[in-house]
Length: 547
Ligand code: GLC
Image (cartoon, rainbow, N blue to C red):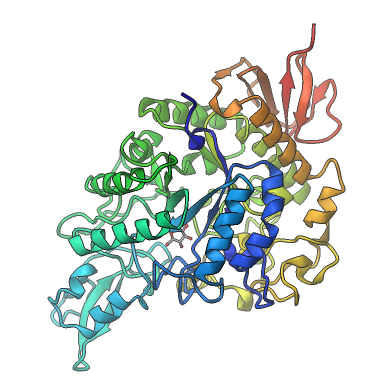
């Protein structure tokens, strides 16, 4: 029996607002994606994951969902969605969509009902409404903080005009957390899953998949210095994340998804470590994938990478799951910048004009990013690629404050720049308005003036471009079945990462001086012109030399 498709799939993340705008609104849309999808199929990926496209006030750019079973008019219609499903499948790709179960938008009818209903009502019981502490309930019910800065509770005005209860939002106040101990909530999401499964989607990326259940009694959190933004379950178990009952919810979803043919996928976005704890989300009756943020947040160091890869393979093997790998997404500083600036990076940090770590060499950033991708795409398991990384896009640092949109920037009072810098609409044609993103040149985040060399049409014409590197890596990965091969480490110097995967040898130089290359035929090199020596910040794939 052949392995299911997700075991070694490479999935390309599309952030709909920033991919392709067909109307000139400045915001990308579904027809835009459908029209440009052949360029993604041509890359050699196996599927796409779409970030949310649901009706939403866009306070958190769609991760604040007002209706889980429709399309926001800015993105199109359900008919446009069906056309996109058909096109995706015609191109031989799978389609994964994003589900946001931890919280709704405050515009969702449930939350509006809750606001209009009294304390203790069934409408409030779908969320976390609680009386405040203090003599007049003027203090929040506990000390939890929002992931976007500030407190995690907001006080409401009751129907009679008095200051009333507080509601919980682990993200923005416009994203009230649902209470998943309420049976109605679980039933509603069964309906949501079926709605999209019936429309032909091949899987779901689950937003904040370690959320949903909060510890009974909502106890205060003991704050810790968690530099990576990952909850470390072996040291302390925070009351908001990774509660044991979350696994029952996940199993229920898996049963629903498994009623449909075709090995449909569930992928967890869970910011957890150690990796063995993360792998609990990928047990056989739970999800098939869990994003590997410990890998993503690993600094540019051969020994650190070797450790995190070893730990990942062991942890996911132990539960019989595919390891997954990811270097960039819509929440983090793009890896073409991140790998060349001092971290650590917590989700939402961003880099902006006043950041102390803004100074770096962009050419070195790109070299490292290309090498990092060459390492990642050789690793056994499945990988996620974020739109624009195949163009070598850097983080956009010089966005003016008044162009910024991410709630993180506003809620932190500008202390964190937030995630806009990785969400700038991507360039297609160097000479078209808005680099071809939009017919009018409109763009919801301003595109840098110097992006023409990154445009896809320019890179198509350059054999050594980052675009062609991705195509070569993906083609060799598929041809040689690297995603289902076994990895073995080779002895190497301290700054060198060396392993075999199947019949391919991968050598990466993370140090600052060249190292000799072993015998072998260079299949792919992350930087052009590699011969007898491997320059710094470069990775190669070697095939055995023909006898
Ligand atoms: C996830 C999403 C992020 C969003 C947050 C709240 O982490 O990736 O973009 O802001 O959840 O929904």
